Image (tube, rainbow, N blue to C red; front, side):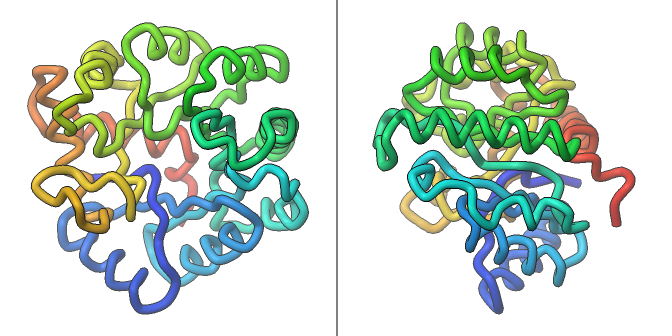
Length: 250
């Protein structure tokens, strides 16, 4: 059985259909990710209505200029397993970089205070990401979601104690560096995700991604590591359970 460690489910019938399709494909645990207060609240509601679905609560760097209002009040909900996704995105700079850094640091503190995992987004901001983690203290359970770096960035990320989560990017023809990072990542430090509806893997490029396709990501990781698919399936399942504390939850 598979865990999609990072997806964005729509509310209502569309989300319910995605959950059912995923379950039929053997993807029986989904982490539904918040990106601002409103989306986080919806993520909690979706998780509340579906067995095997949990939520994260956080503010994406794109939305950092709006601050953290409405986030803290959601952290006590039983469906919430992590803070995030949060971090830095210097590729688009939709929020000013000082605001991104401030809101990222604050969410590290929330994860620590509430003993929750931290879901981290970083793009074109490796040095500042590692500097803030060093200054604030990397939470014991942290994941670099949709890992896009190569072996050097993977080594730095793993040195913080974090887990790496690989998305459909690992299946892309030009993503040689990401596959090399996956090849070198210890089995007990990796997860797989879709980041749906984004980053659909082949043969579904150009379509809206869906959690049911996470085994295709797992297959690319298994190929990169030269191990059986079942090995990645079992290892990523166990890592997700540990990182998000799922063993003690419904």
